[in-house]
Length: 151
Length: 138
Image (cartoon, rainbow over all chains, first blue to last red; front, side, top):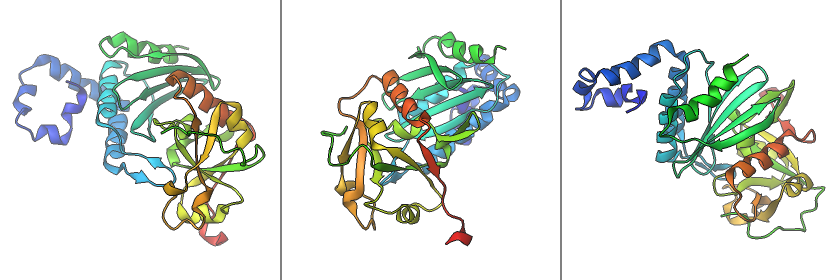
């Protein structure tokens, strides 16, 4: 489960009592209290999901369910609190991107309709490195963000 | 679907107009440019319009409040993208559907390479962003 389970629809579900009995879940949820970027990221993602539509002549901006799920999983894996808010953007064809920028460094995650996620480490507007994010390994997502946050 | 062919009657000197979502504009080194996301359609088909076959004013009217990137066809081809006319996919009320094209690699690219190609295009100094006119300018 990811921090998104704290969203309004989840709170109204029958599963709510589980949150109060599972310490691990509560620990995840408290991350949102100390990571302000998480609210912004989740709000942007939610807005994209709600507003996604086909704009003929521009693209298809309906966010694929698997891309959104991957994004939420990424957010939960990036257990770094001291980050600026990312920019969550739609990409035509059901994908989305998440971009953090700090000075000359930037980290971009691309989440695709097939559930795959890629990271791109960028500096001075150049891609230094890219790779697949292993969503079963927390460090896989966190390493790129940690790199960006280093002076 | 990716472009099935490159319509070479669209010369390299031709400019293509790519409508930009607001989140597809970034400022790097003091210069505004499109983000690579604007050219990363998952199906390798990024909609554009051929400038001259449709006016910028009309594109702004079709997509009010959105900005437009002007991209040279030669730049797009240099990065391995093809340009294919897709009149059937033009937006409603477009006066010249034939001006609608899609750009992208003819053969689906590995995603990392696709990102790099798109980034190279949008970083090119020849790429400019045309903002929508203000009400006063209409």
